[in-house]
Image 1 (cartoon, rainbow, N blue to C red):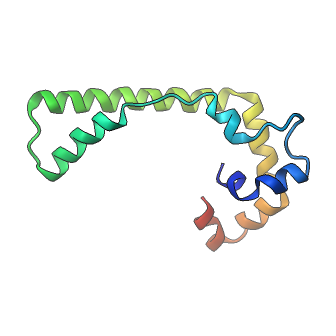
Image 2: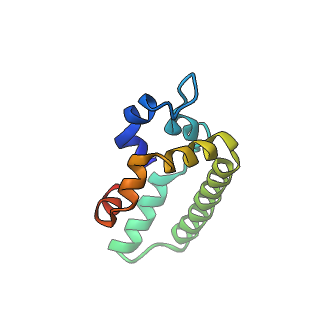
Image 3: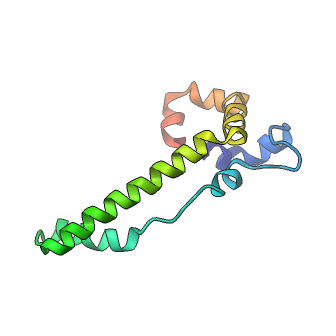
Length: 112
């Protein structure tokens, strides 16, 4: 998706997107789900900075990590199972500008 951020207009100009234009970010966003980052972050940083989570806070942190990881895995699997998204990713990977960036390790590290 990073390539789309930089080359979106070029991809559209070169006919990479189907009509009507279906941008990768829009297609991926259909699968996104929220995770409870705020509560997780509160406990995580309290543990890191203060080092003294109460047992119930430690348990809640662990539960949040498991729940968030489950959600992330579900989203990744849904995206991987979406044929349109995977086809669009392959088209993007095959674009000459992306190939040029992928061939230059210094640029590629900065883009990804």
